[in-house]
Image (cartoon, rainbow, N blue to C red; front, side, top):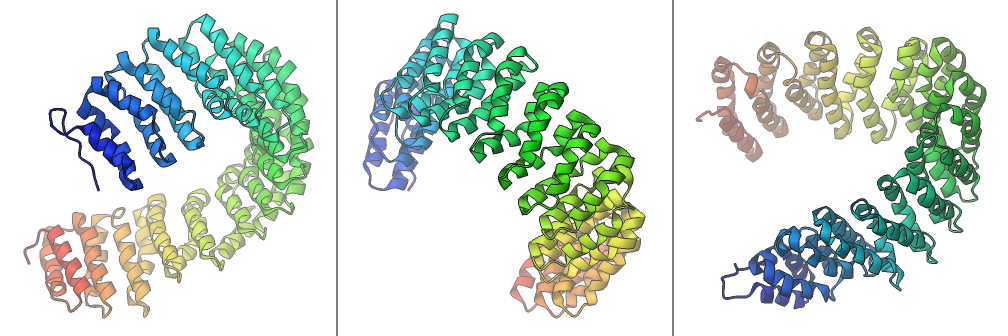
Length: 587
């Protein structure tokens, strides 16, 4: 049921309709009413909205779904209450919603409140600050959680006295006895760091971060890592960073909770970039080695994904000396996710090492990963082949690369075969025309008659991508004859692949090829005994329509469609009529 609210001049009262629907036991009806709250407000007008509708919303006692809809709608209510001059009237109902128990409702209320702040006239900002005071000092922890998300948006616009007050209030939240409040404060500390001046970061926010980073709850310490990254990026090589942040980072790397160590490992590249190459070499490299050797696979997985990023900062010599021995162990790690993460990143070391060092230290590792039992490891290496190809060329890897590609293309899991298809155009571009024709050309064709439709469909799209890589002339000489030959295959699914291929390739080949090579074959297939083939002939003709010569339309397409419109199969007749309309043929 959809509600329609009358205009203000209608004798029926929009407010009464709205209230009636809210009283209903039908939840969808209630939700629909709440989602049309703006319509209700427009019907009432700004004055009645402020005086009658908003007080009703302040006293709502509804399900969480309805409250969530209210919180969302109120964020779009500025014009409904009379514009920026009256935006403060929305604060009370949103404050009430920010105090409810359900986190999703509170988060939406906070989101709506933050949308309102830029609209506030400066003299009215005190209304918003009072909301922060109320929520942050509330006896229940739920409102205090909500308040954490409001400080950063308000801080830049208030005067110095109020800024100090907000800093103090936020500091209290960082020391709150309830872990959930401290987690919320920790989550929003990174945003606060971006809005305050540098001195405030050093004097006020650093101590807050330090307390949170040493919290007895690992969930708080884990979130503190994000705040750490924000502070490090803000202060750079400042002495405060080295003096206060660095010891805390080093402590976090040895934290008893693997989640904290994982968070540090996941952000390690950002931390190193903020501190710079010298401090990374002096203080952080040894800690990175610890993360690569961590007892938890999740931590090692995160750390291995940062190998190239850290190596860029410390250089090839230190990487060879300290990081490479770890990589040699990680290649044989018991965890598949670790090896897959390593494979997706380690190829980036080749440009850092250069040709000689890559051949000496890395080539054997790459070959080991290409032989890995886990398909994602092999796929990751293949996807990053360009990094190595630019440095040493594909010739050294090809003896191991090709078996890995063919093994993946023959995997029993169709999703693995589908994944390797996506990399064939990439490999074609990286390895060059001669190598592709010699080694991979037949594979691209073979995948067209895979037993799984999704594979055949992806292989068909691959033909288009390969034509874009190597050009139309290559496609005409090397690929098109093999593809078109499928039209006589005894299996109708493979004959259908011919039609799909023609449809896809029509956008990248020349009109001459379409008119002289493709169209005659499509016309020939119009008499196929299988109805699925015949109605796909109609679809294919429709795809060719933009490039066909008018003479061919009259001499070949029209007679074919006339026959298909009279076909015994209902679907064939339907698609034939559609195609005739596309050609603007009166048949």
